[in-house]
Every structure is written in C-alpha cells, then in structure tokens.
Length: 213
Image 1 (cartoon, rainbow, N blue to C red):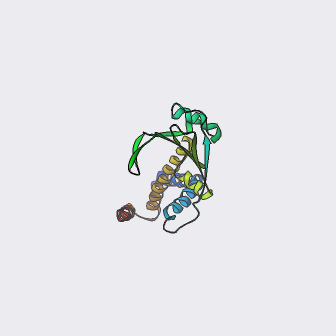
Image 2 (cartoon, one colour; image 1 turned 60 degrees about the horizontal axis):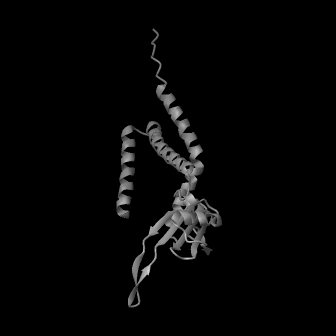
Image 3 (cartoon, rainbow, N blue to C red; image 1 turned 60 degrees about the vertical axis):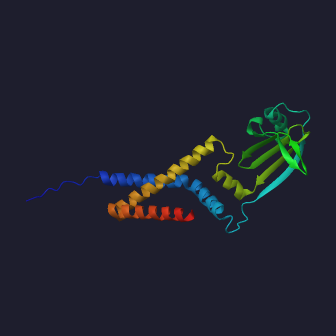
C-alpha cells in the first residue's frame, strides 16, 4: 500500500527567504550611513568624559563696516551677505530690544541689538550688530573633519534632502532590528523565547535610561 503525504507548504520558507534577502540588502544599503552615525555618536557621547580632541573647531572674528544705518534686520542681512558669501535668507535674525543697564553709580540706555546666525555642516556664521553702530562683529566657526561629520549626525545646517535621508536610515535601522528579531525567532528559537529576549532588552534599555536621569 502506498501512503501519500501532503506536501508541506513552502509559504513559510519563501517568506523567510525573502525577508533574509531584504534584511541583507537593507543592511548593505545603509552600511555607510550607520557607520557614520555610529562613529559620530560615539564621539558625541564621550567627548566630555574621555576628553576626545577629535571634535575641534577654528574660530575667526572680523569686523565688517556698516556704511549706512539699516532700516531693519533684513536690510542689514542684505548688506552684509555679499561680504559673508552667503544668501541673505540664510541669516536668521534675533532682536533684543533696547534696555537700561547699570553702569557705575547710574544707568545707561543700551541700544537694540541684532544678532544673526547661519549654519551649514562645514561652517557657522554669527553676526552681532548694535543699532546705530558703524560696524558689525562676525564670528566664523569652521569644524574639523570629525566635527563636520558630527554636525551631519545632528543635521545642523543641512537641507531637506539630508533630513529625509537620515529619516530613511533611522527607519531602515528600525526595520533591521525588527526583521533580525523575527529571523532569530524563526531560525533559532521559539516565539516565547523571542518575546522574552525582546522584553529583556527593552527592560535593560529602560533601566539604563532611568539611571542616567
């Protein structure tokens, strides 16, 4: 007598095969971004405790003449932008109103102060101008390579394209974590063991965050 056994479904095997492929290709595609974030994250986390000198910067201060009294911060930004080599719209203004300040035994009237800031990953520009003055103080800060990469990590002065790329890398990392858990549970353990592993990892991360304050 011949016994016919039903052929096992290959749906589960196919899903695992495709998930392994997607997991591998996602990891390959995001390898450079993840390496960047891992390296700069380590430097940012330990720059104070370990006194890592890698994150360094160079500051240059200069005075720019203000030929005519500007009517408003936008006019000053337009006047200084060519000398700074940046677009006027990149200079973000902040206005501190005039106020009385103590000076010796009396008081002085401090004029209104306009400050501007423009950031790119490779440079920071700060401008300070006292209304009525004939010059503006400019501080330019240029980071070294490691600080430049750290500024990319924090999306300082980057455009929407880089922000979207960073978001995609973050979502990809989340997918790698979830798919890694799923594959481990399918290939090396039971769902119960997988749930215990995930719960333990979450508990450890929560405890460390609580201890850190």
